Image (cartoon, rainbow, N blue to C red; front, side):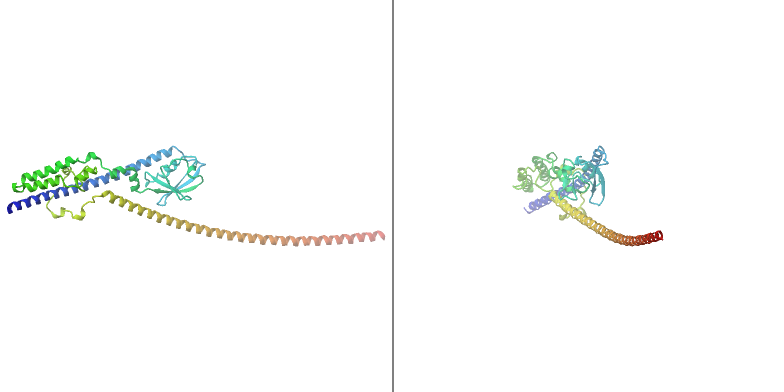
Length: 354
C-alpha cells in the first residue's frame, strides 16, 4: 500500500515537472515572439512614416509657393521652424502637407495658431480662411504620441487576436489527453486510477476555467500563458537542469500586457506633454525677454527722439530771435534813411529860397 502511494507521488511529481518544463518552454518561445513582433512593429512604423512624408512631399510639389500669398511660419516642439506662403483660398491640407515634412512627423497631428486656444487635426478639410488663417501668422505643430497614433491606426491589432491562429477547444482538450495518456502508459498500474482522475481534471476542469472561457468566446484555454504544444517545438531552447535557466516567479510575464502597455503609453504621453509644456514655458520666457529688450530699445529711441525735438525747438527759438534782431535793425536803418531824406528835402528847399 505504501509502495503504491509512493509510486503515485513519483508519477504526480513527474507530471508536474513535465508541465513546468512545458510552461517554461512556452514562456521562452513567447518572449522571443514578442521581441520579434516589437522589432517588426518598429520597422513597419518607420517605413509607414517615411512613406507618409514622401506622399506629402509629392502632393506639396503640385502647388508651387505663391509670391503674393500669406506668409505662415510653422514651429515645431524642438524649436525649429520653417516658412512658406499660401493663398487663403487654398485647402488647409496643403498646410498640413508642408508641416508634416519634418522627420518626427506622425500620420496624424494637430496644429494651433498663436491667437487660438483650440487645435485643428490634420484630418480636417476646408480652406485656410475657413479655419481663421487670413493674415501672416505662426502655427504650432503638436505631434500625437505613438500610443494615440497606434490606437487609431492599429487598434484591432492591439486588442484582437485572429481566431485562425488559436487552437479550438477540442484541440486543446486533445493535447491534454495525449500528454496525460503518455503518463498513464508509463505509470504503474496501482497509480493509474489517480492519474486518470488528474487527467480528467486537467482535460475538463471545473467551472471558471475552460467552460467559462468558451462562454466568453475565448477560444484558447483561460490560462494566461497557454500556448499550443506543437508551437513550442519550433526553436525549442535547451532545458538543462542548471539553476541559472530557471526564472524566478517575479520574472513571469504579465497576463494582461495590453493594460500594462496602455498604462506605459499614457505615462509616456504625460511625460511628453510635460516636456512640451516646459519647452513652451521656456519659449514664452525667451519671447518675454525679447519683448523686454524691444521695449527698452523703443524707450531709448523715444528718449533720442525727445532730445532731437528739444534741440530742434532750441534752434527754432534761436532762429526766431535772430530774425527779430534783424527785423529791428532793418527798422532802425529804415528810420535813419527816412530822417536823412527829410533833411535832404529841407536843404533843397532852403537852396531854392536863396
